[in-house]
Length: 530
Image 1 (spheres, rainbow, N blue to C red):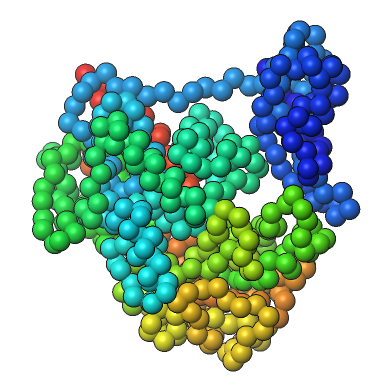
Image 2 (cartoon, rainbow, N blue to C red):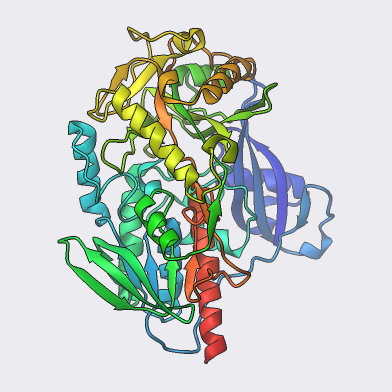
């Protein structure tokens, strides 16, 4: 096949129009193209009077050897398939956690014939959605089942963004193809900024579970790992606490540890049991919320353009104080959501449904933090730093899981907000107007203030006076890294740290891809023993 890049196409173009444009570029009659596949599609909005798509297509045609190659026409690269098989039938491996990393690791092991046991401390995604909705409506937090804990992981209640900075290879391709097979939109295979949406994520997660079960895998919900048993530095069993409070011991020689970035009690247990881990820098800040119409007008020149969904943005600045700030997890047409998982602590996150059609846009405005902010070299110091901020936010919000909120104008002037403007905060169970600055470290606040001013120069309207800051955003990524060797094992042999919680990924796609790599390493170890 021939790859044709940089095809400029109108927003209304379908695959047939793209095929015709590719034929023009290839200088062949369109009927000579026997197969055409859309590989990439991105919006080019640099010229507001000419917003269009830029596409890449793979085309199969007669007499391909006669095509003249140039910078935009080249042979389509060979795509290696992800295939995993195990030579040896053994005691089923265990996957601890069913977020993106755990799900894809479990699926790979199941496809290899290993019938994995999937342990999840939370509930299945259907019940979990009801628990989360109850929390958002009433403020009654369920510490077992929430935005952080349960089938699908934290990514289930997000925008479902799949864009990633990691290499596009057989692992990322496998991830996207499995997501589509489970119900995600097919467009995620070619959009430059793919997303699924929370409403579609729930169905997708459930279907992946069914596929694993059909292959012989077993799911155990409300089963939290509370201890490790080992002999001579090797894993032998897992101590389990079940939902009803009973305890059990599960024999286990190989386990993938995909616990997510918020399993703080598990981090503490693992540290006490001698698992090698260290601090990892991350970022904290608040959610900033604007009218989506403002973002559309800034990015597209109009509040709405047929054929385009809600506009997004990505901003970063490096400031004179030596710190950097950036926007993260931008949710067009979305909501700011309550993402607490511990009693007496408030934390926010962002979420969009597939349509991205809500009134507001939101993004995390974050500042990087590390050991100098934590004030300790302890491996879990970053986690305790997060907890302190979340406890301050709980108090500032009224101790009922409302979040402290402040208008941008007041935030820049260091004064509490007393009334809202045109932006109606989307956070549920509600906000308490006060001072966001009061719950974050002083240096973080100063950096955010300077960043808002600088970012407004890049995205006019970012510093609009009645934009709303809702705090805090503390769980941008894991505060720890669980050390693993070149074979993906920890210092406790047979235990494979994996995904975002272990410090090796930064989003749905990268975490899921890491799950596939770790599953591959585990199968390799089993084959070596055969």
